[in-house]
Length: 375
Image (cartoon, rainbow, N blue to C red; front, side, top):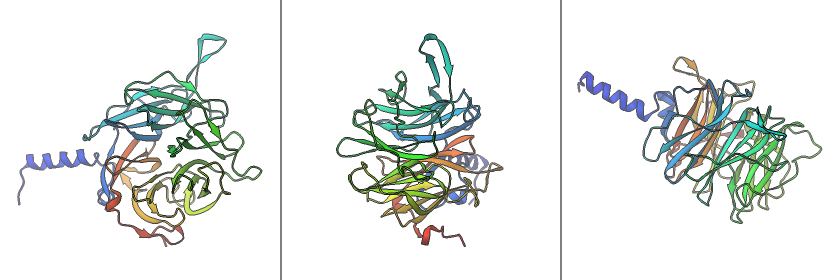
């Protein structure tokens, strides 16, 4: 069959629109289960971006991330992009929060700090909540909150969370049937330490556990939550070389000791989402600092939180657009369409968006947490 040049151009344009102008290579996007992949933006007013989060509102999918000159610089702000449901076009990045703080003794004086690690949560009250951090470093940052009544088009004034409360430090919170929004949190001021927090009013008042492993030196931060039931929970935490795990049988009030999971981790953020059938889908870097750091980004599935099956490779250190690709700090939600919607950092230059149909995944066993291609 012969095609005219115009027809070929139209087909090429349609392919580019559907698959995000090459945000995944052909061999990666062709994996069973991948529905869509695209960058949120190709160019922006900031040079660097990182630590994205995603949420679904009544009419939109919305992503947030921090962006500026570079991580830790004072001009780093929280930005959002929105996409109408049923369309493929994301809006240009819009600033949602900055790190400007007023000096209490003189309200005309300002001091500016970098922003960090946004986490979106669509409240059951119809409001959209934006948790994030402000401060000179992760060792000295504090929790902040903004609220939107119009699905992220505009935001309230920034509110500082109570002293000692970080809010969800990296991964989204999980709503329990007793009305508690359970959030994985951590601190870095005296080493990497994990704790859990919950709120029954979306951030006005909080309760928190003590630090995990008090008296033991176990470096772990940024928990993500697997929900087996309202009482039976698991967290997986960022650490060096292996993801660390802990279990709770009382709705997150008390937890078992942190132990190594079978999955590797190069000290990078992760996120998990619970599927309708009770399984859990994890997006993570299947590598250690010695075997590729954040150049590989993978998807695995579990029923029990202990044994895993390989599902997808989203990034594998090969090139896209003549650049060595890498993916890190994923965030994932289960959409009302039954698909898993994922965002993650791509080379600290862009945010990539991937849609996954969990019903079409082809799963392979991972004995002892080893990816199938590994020797």
